[in-house]
Image (cartoon, rainbow, N blue to C red):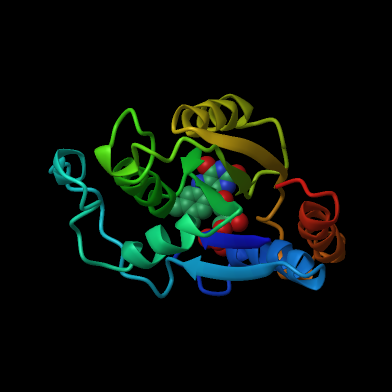
Length: 191
Ligand SMILES: Cc1cc2nc3c(=O)[nH]c(=O)nc-3n(C[C@H](O)[C@H](O)[C@H](O)COP(=O)(O)O)c2cc1C
């Protein structure tokens, strides 16, 4: 089983990195192959809306680090997408990643993936400063639906909340809970 993590935050050792890395750690302990991609050390530009990806079979024409992620996605059984809530929505990095998927997904949209109709597992992992886990439920539900439209089979990690009182790395419950979630992905074959 091959699981990749995307850290849609600029903070190298921030909360999103901690969360995604621990989910992957749990999966790795159960034998999964894992790889992680972080916006903190990647150069990934926004979609420029050129539509080149839809006009031929070359995929996205922007030559940046998103090309590594496109390749990794091709071989992944599941993608763990770590998204911090910034101003009530996913971070700008998360949105850039999402927009760039336009080039790779949905045979309806892109001739490049005409033959690729298999739904891939996407695990959404939101985190936020606010303690109220339901505060952004409408937005998170909407985001889930949006990824389903992009033909992913979407699952969610419970939203990690209350991070304004201290970093995720200092929360004992998270160390265990996140690793258990990652482990369950492999053991219970959730992907
Ligand atoms: C620009 C910005 C906007 C934020 N907006 C919200 C928000 O609307 N609601 C919330 O609960 N937390 C908000 N936060 C807190 C982050 O969601 C929280 O600190 C998160 O864990 C940051 O993840 P990171 O360390 O990976 O960047 C915001 C943080 C920043 C930097």
